[in-house]
Image: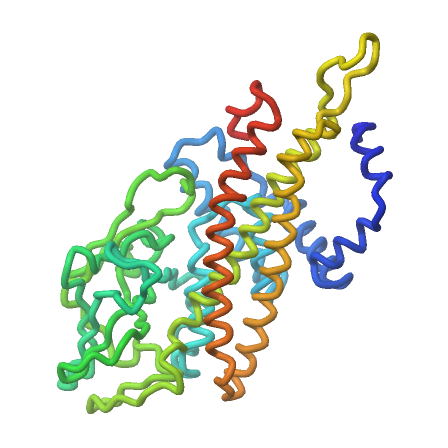
Length: 409
């Protein structure tokens, strides 16, 4: 270890292991996280070349291969806790996004939380075994976070007991869902439910979009990749236009709201239950914001500890750039922000888990709390990340010196 770095660590006025336990949620969670990390990092099957030296197509192909292996390893190691699955994914892909992010992070959780037991029996195990690969199609060309404004329609036809799904406008085309462009053969589509001309609001439907044998788009399904982006090359973000797509009545997720064969509509205990998956993912976004900013903090602070520059006094050793007040002014507020994000993320995660357990027991009284806190927490973190995260990362890049700032690493 670099002697400057060792000296800085030894001079800490707190127990670093205790802080680690606090961040992880306790000693046992630290132990388990490290165990999962070791499983991923030491598995020779999961080692691949650096994506930084690959083309756009090569990154996607390598990520698909690695994701397929990753799911098999998750099953072999009996990793079932959602948080632990996220840990394992993170270590397998070294923090890079991957094509199965929405399959594992949104498609499967939505089936578990919003499907009936019969629907779970039908869809979950094929999805867990990657026979069904799904995505979560919410965002449209015209609407994102204002999901009440989504325009995709699902009209119930009682004569055939089917829903007919359509993208009636250009702005109703689903746009941006990860895994939609190439990988998925199913999608959970959020659409406005119409029964006998009346709109019943937003509901979730499992929609096949590609043939299981050939992976070709099904008739009436216009689907594809939105193309190169600023980053996220491993993820095939896609678009989806539906033209009179018919699905069985049983493909509407009916744990809460139900449509009977004759078209009778049974309201859910709360119309906000459809938003559950997005609440979960927003809680994860806050935690990921903390992780990304923490990575930038770690790199910049470590570099500042080992980098020496400028002879302030003739013959004196060059000081660490971490000792310059201007460097501390750049780094320390962002370091504090990373911790704040982490604790907010942990709070939101714990609240989500607590209220989800209450909902499973039939208690919906705390649902507005998690929805409100999630929205406020996500908005604040997005705003803060835009300033402290995006700008903070830029500050970190500038803080490590001109000759390093243009390196992709």
